[in-house]
Image (cartoon, rainbow, N blue to C red; front, side, top):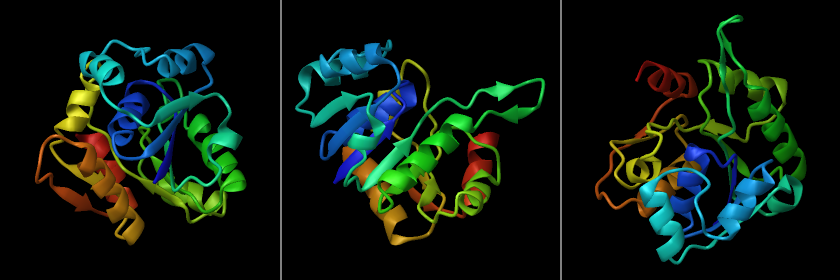
Length: 200
C-alpha cells in the first residue's frame, strides 16, 4: 500500500512510522525543517519510541513538502494537520484539513482520505457534501504527546467512522503495525466516531 501522511506533528509522525513498517509511506509537511529531520531519520519532536524506531527499524519512509507529487497513486492519505480550538468563536479551525481534502481530491481522486485531526461532530458529512466527494472517512486518535508511537503500538482500540471495505482495510493496516495483538476494531458512523473522540 502507498500511504501519504499530511502533517508531521505527533499524530501524523507516529502514524507514519507505525505504517512504514509494512507499507510505503510519504510524510508531507509545510515545514522543510521537519521534512529534513525525518529524511535524516531524526524525530523532529520529543518521543522516545519515535526516535528509536527512526534510528533502528527498517522503515519504508520518506518525507516531502510537495503534496501534489506525493499523493500520486496513493491508496490512503491521512490528514493530521492542526485544528486549533478558537475560544472566541467556539469552533475548531478546520481550514487546513479542508484545504488538504480539496487538494488531494483534485490530484488523486482514487485515494481514500482518512482524517485524524480533531474535528467537530458532523464535519465529515458536511465536508463530503460541500466538496462533492465520497472519499473522506474519520478515524479518531487517542494519543498522548510524547508517547504517541507507544500509544499507536499498544492501542486500547481502533475506531473508523465508516462501515465499509476501505474502512476495514485501513483499521487492519493500523493493527498490523501494532505490537499489541487482538486489538479491538470498531466501525461506527461518522458522527459517532467524531463524538467518541470529543467525549473521550
